[in-house]
Image 1: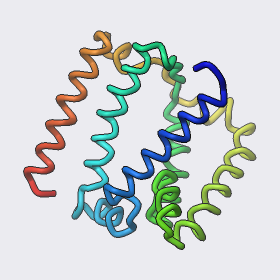
Image 2: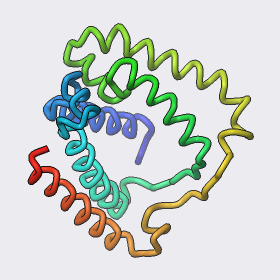
Image 3: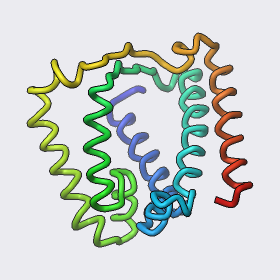
Image 4: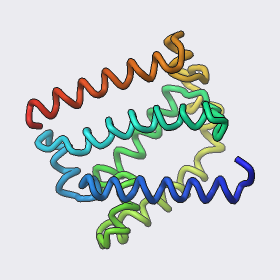
Length: 180
């Protein structure tokens, strides 16, 4: 990227497009999300699997064109546990994740505005307060190195993306065929 402003503008544009697509797919609807949690409506799963395939191909095309530089971060089981707990509590309380809250607010959903936005701010503040105390302990528990899926699998990048695309498309086909 040439400048931070251009980088932010592209990020905003892709965020708006992603929110629009979440809305069009129904993922900003409480009923659709509840249907996913009750395993009666798999629209959210279909949206997310499609997003993974499109995102994987898109990011690597942008990287190949020299438009982005990947900088994966290392992770840990501790980070995943804390993040999953915070995400799960918020999701269970309101039925929205942070992405769908933004889409639902844009759609005029009062429950997302009144419950979701303060929840995001409270969760962010709480994490900022707690982070210095847990960054060298809990968050490093079960650390695993940074890297990408192709590096982990020791396969060429496009072979990994092709394999991922075939697997996820096959899963989407099976979900659709089962009329879920």
